[in-house]
Length: 145
Image (tube, rainbow, N blue to C red; front, top):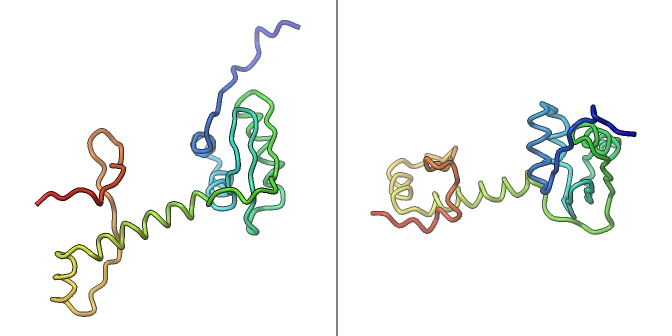
């Protein structure tokens, strides 16, 4: 059966690409579930092996399989692994943010300001992105005076 009208297929080679695809499709519940409730074990084009957080929706695996198949034009197999998987994307982001905040708190200039204004708190830390758009791998190594 020649399929001149077959939908083009989309290759997904990483978990980050899956999250970006959910964002592109404006499926915020799936994007949030991938970030918050899924611990990646293995991701290959057409196959996703994951471990789930206790907060994961009951139908998440079925929904992911159905939506990924529809979005990419190829059959996807989503399986729950017995392996623990890595940290969730959300917990990785929180750990990076905490490390950034610890780095700022230990900066001598920030410590001087905190000493000058007792009770002051650092309430938000953001990282500048260079013009190229990539965040520097280790911003803590920048020792510019």
